[in-house]
Image 1 (cartoon, rainbow, N blue to C red):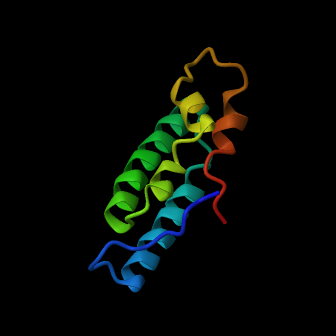
Image 2: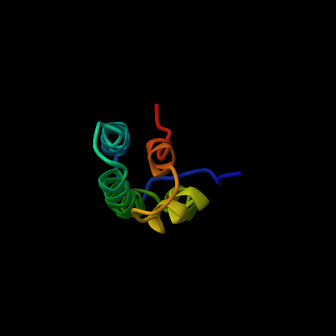
Length: 96
């Protein structure tokens, strides 16, 4: 279970909402029609960028640590020989 998430001092709720909305849109855009390896790289770049932004927005480590799931580490270890990589990467960030 995640801890309550509190914005860092000085972070307005409007700014936090704007960044969360932007990160969610960027995550949804990742699954556009490219091959699995490029999708992997795009997902990892998104996760690393999102982690940095969430660290700057929230005091609660659970917020950014929730990005570093088993799926993240599995995707990170993928290569061209990984069996059925597209479904794994395509199901990466499940953000609505």
